[in-house]
Image 1: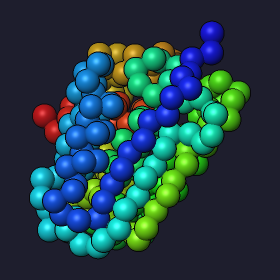
Image 2: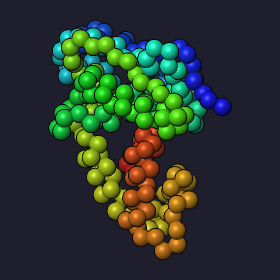
Image 3: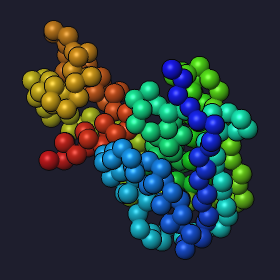
Length: 220
């Protein structure tokens, strides 16, 4: 059965220091109130660090709605949250791919990423159109990459690959069996260690909440 709602979600962000709580509180309520997705919550809290100086720069206003006109806003296949909320959190936690070396995520980065990803997901999962609608005035930072550490997605995955390469094949199999069964099910007899690592990292690229779990496990 098609899952969607006629009402649209809307996020308002303003590029003035006292107003940043608006987008922070709105997103936390939309994403976590009913499902308790703790791994994505941790990444979101890190990205929306409290009162960093970098986020006080710039002025403007951005309104991003989950869909346009009479379009429906669809939920994900796993029923955990809406596609719009999911991809918005992705964008704010470093997946929006801002300019190489940038420490902050600009509102333009977020709008571009969310618009593209929501449209792709709606077509893939429901064969329907859902195009986020935006109205902006100015461009300003609204989140920090990896809590302001300036680590890009490419650098993050390179670091995770290095950590995984320290494990032998049995340890990788055990890691996936215990924590990433969807990846473990793809392993076959005689599969090389580097192939296992590639499957695990590809799985985490497509599932940000799993990426947070892998980071935590490898940090222990």
